[in-house]
Image 1: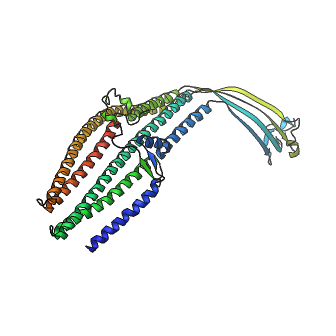
Image 2: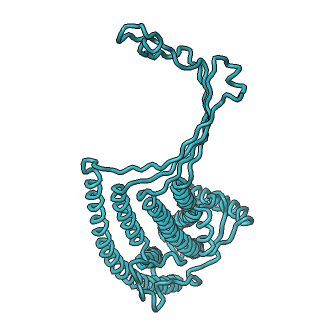
Image 3: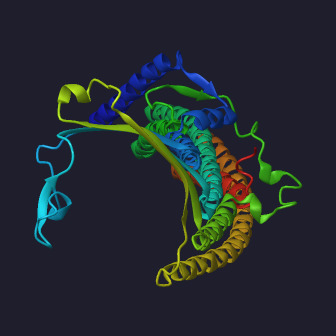
Length: 456
């Protein structure tokens, strides 16, 4: 009995300390409805922040590709010291008519110092690959947006499941607390009967065992509730150290799956996975078009203007005197591919194979969606029926327990019957909450299968 008392006292102190800490936290607790949690996650979930950053990056990539089609202007300048002036060989007769035939003479051409400054311009006139690439980059940006929607869908599903987990854990904790009060009252009554000689010591011990178990269950329920809260805050992107409370309950939440027209007007495009495959299909088509466009010629406009100078004195070079001479060029440059060893043809064949793979994946995804919807519907219906049965079992087991306690108090029932009825009642509670949680999770999976988790 002393050891049991120590355990009970320790658990009681833990509960008291937890209660004091919880009361201190509740003063600053923020209240969230289910929609509030979703809205907060949309702004703060790290995965969504990364997805938005990917969109920004892809939009910048479009700007980068556009920039390659705009005028490219650059300036250049150089100063050179020809510390060894190169020697050229000329016929000797150019300087001395009497020189032998075929004789050469070395002559140094150039100046010790040279300078050059120019402004250069290039402008793309036509490049088939550029225009296809520009369209592909915009399509890639759309793919990034679809990836964001996919991440948002996953986050909403995780938020709903975590929110439902907290609601179920709260109900379980409240019921466990009622069980604690019920067994505490029964233990006191049994001890009183024992002291009055109407019960045996073993009867007290049986109830004491159940009471100790409910203390553990009470503590576990509190821990489970805290874990559920932390998981919800994690999915939201809210610091785990912050305290929150929920403003919704299961009765106030509207479940889409219970709407009469929930399954009406479904299209495969409602599923983000299908949309992403369609965009990938477009990207591969554009990739094929881009490869084929490389058979076409490219045309560029170019021009430059500058000035150059040479001198034997460095001072004269940097004085920018009148001896600087201007030059300039303008022209068109065309590049026509002739033969590349059939490389582009083989690339097109590879892309066509990828296109076929995506088309097969699209058909497979349709079948998977059909299968998911059927399985999710059957699973949800099964869990709903199980929930109804477990609720009825819990109510019946409570009635049995109440009647058994009354019989025991009136002296026409045994202590063992009360203990058995209590165990059956708690088992029915456990089964009910498991069925409740499974049903809620199944409702989320059913919403996801019909593409209705994220409503925009």
